[in-house]
Image (cartoon, rainbow, N blue to C red; front, side, top):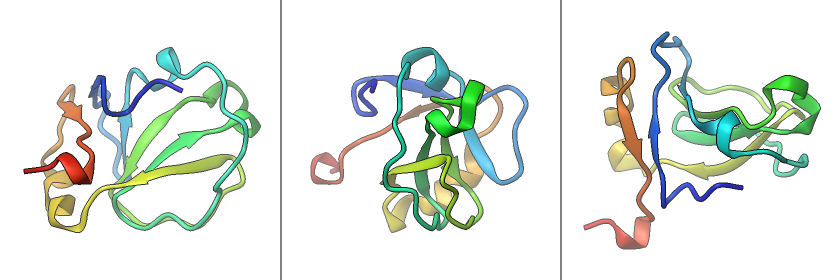
Length: 104
């Protein structure tokens, strides 16, 4: 899988209501077996796995809580103090993930 922390990601131009859909996900993530398919609260970072067919590799950040889906892997979580920033991510907005232990 592409490194979440080494790349800059961009929200799609067609903004979704419930998730931030990052354009580069399917371009950079070529294989994704099912794992960690659990409940997804606000701020969860997910990748659609091989069970999702052509959508495999879709990288998203949840703006609304969603139930578990066997086609969607949970790969991370936005820290609580940054959850309010999700509402500010608009069309084509760049996003960079920073490890919690590296955040200053």
